[in-house]
Image (tube, rainbow, N blue to C red; front, side, top):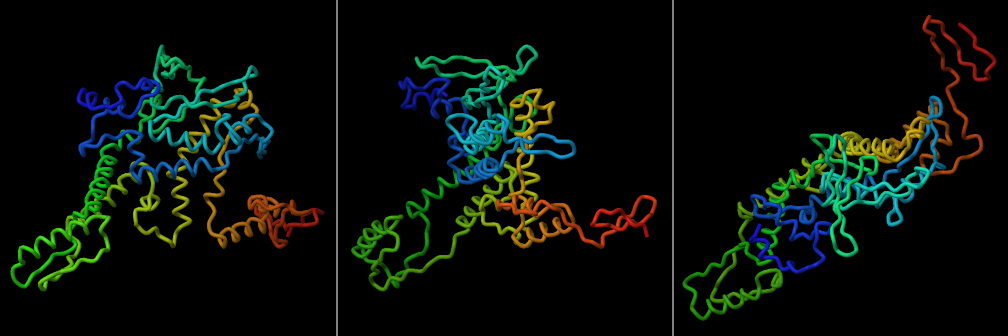
Length: 417
């Protein structure tokens, strides 16, 4: 730690504090991985596989429609006129849209294990804003038998203020947890895998950037003269590396250039890079093809792949968000009156256009959907008469006692047969 401290060029930077810790300061308290790379939230995002994995979650979940519903008997209606709908659908605070807030929330939770926001209420108890607390310096704890959130915030005069919030004063999304109080950072648990991935990227950049790979050898029919040897060395010096790629090289005295096939160590290097991408996919509970690792997804079963992705990867996060919203944002009176948040997954679960048409057609012909409902799902306007339901005229009902009841579309009673 002291060695890192002495190496730092930021020791006299007055802006560095516990509430605004810079990367060099955080690195002092984190041991490097076995690969020699220090992995934290900032460096992890420099690895393309981690960036891709987190962006998949944050962008998909942030873009999903988040609805507020109210139970209405056996059915439900959208509660678009409720203050909580406007908060989460439009803008959770004056700085962010709903998408920006929710995608940032997912990103913070993956990086630090916890995504925590201060809940700002008006005198009537309605939530008017959700403000992020510093991710690096905010920790959930048990104090006096109660869950509290302890954070360090930098004041205007540069001093650090310790602030403690009660559980009902914050919105807390947590990652996988062993105690149900604080989430575990994916980045910290995957630090060795991420460190190896960063190391291979750095190695590859240095290797190919300096032209250190042997693509071929020169052969001479006899012995190369000193003058020709010196000219060759000088000429080669200016034609290696990225700056000298694709330039011509003049060979003397009957010399020939023989291209080599890929060296085993180069092939192993590429395999290591692909393997690390799969490792990152495992850490983030994503299929490897979602990280663009070169594996071919099974094109014949795209619908099932999408369903698995929603079911096993996205759905646990969506339920996590919905339950915390219902518990912290809605009042006890709201919950008693049947209000609840839920994401609309229809967009993620759609198949191709042919499958969609077949699904909606069956739903309309069997009285499950009316035409206007289907048009609404496709963002199309309804039409007069489109709220009616349709069923085939030759349908029959068999009652529990075995009686066959003929369907009467005119509603003048049923005829038993």
